[in-house]
Image 1 (cartoon, rainbow, N blue to C red):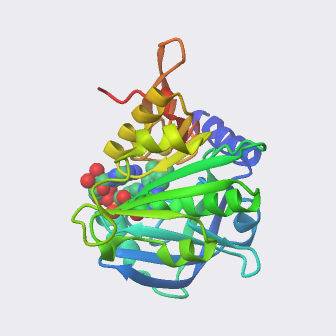
Image 2: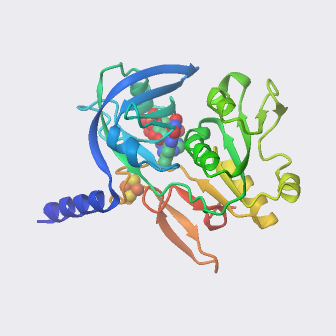
Length: 281
Ligand SMILES: Cc1cc2nc3c(=O)[nH]c(=O)nc-3n(C[C@H](O)[C@H](O)[C@H](O)COP(=O)(O)OP(=O)(O)OC[C@H]3O[C@@H](n4cnc5c(N)ncnc54)[C@H](O)[C@@H]3O)c2cc1C
Ligand code: FES
């Protein structure tokens, strides 16, 4: 009885949200840096409706372990090829197996998931801040900003020059990109949040979009709050289902009046206003 009710609830959520559970063929997979891979998956219906900032739950194999999918931002979409691309870094069991997948393999994918970035129609100037693998969900956002004619500058960080991702794509977008590396092997030595306060004062940016390691997002959100510039951050949490059922990805959320409540990163996010995130500080 309870099992039937849960099944009904799952189906209802999937239908209402336009989420699909598909078996996607791996069209391509290759390493772009040590331990970082790009994987293109055949998913025409997902490619047709995915929004910048949305993600997929992907499992490295149809049978066996791991039982749960791993959340990955949608990095690129090719409507003509009917494909989506993910960019992922190997961390543990799931991503190690994902890196071993071969062209032609069929992977269980649930997508598109989450809310995505909110780009106001009348936005004039935007600043996009990315760190490491965080550039993945930002690239489709940059495409949308370009399409909408929004003047956009990018601050991009990585540990080292060889771990700076998406540079080939960013060059094609022809936007101002300032590069930061932790060790100074390319661009400015330090983090993309460096000098952000001054840039916000002078740049007239109306919104900041950020994805990267938590310390970077926290620092960017705090600088934006101090400058009174809206900031959207894309949060990461461990996930079970990816569409709001298991409550495995709950975080504290701070409303404008200071009230703390719980939100599901997969369903209410992963993109939140920086001011609404309870940064535990
Ligand atoms: C909405 C969303 C989008 C994401 N997009 C991308 C992406 O585009 N590319 C990418 O490489 N990664 C992305 N991640 C993180 C990715 O999902 C995790 O790295 C992955 O699930 C780890 O799985 P694993 O089995 O290899 O590691 P596990 O064996 O499960 O864990 C290994 C290590 O990874 C950490 N970890 C596990 N899950 C997460 C998680 N969800 N977020 C952060 N750290 C985690 C653990 O704390 C542990 O230190 C995203 C996460 C979320 C929530
Ligand atoms: S992962 Fe299941 S509710 Fe978010």
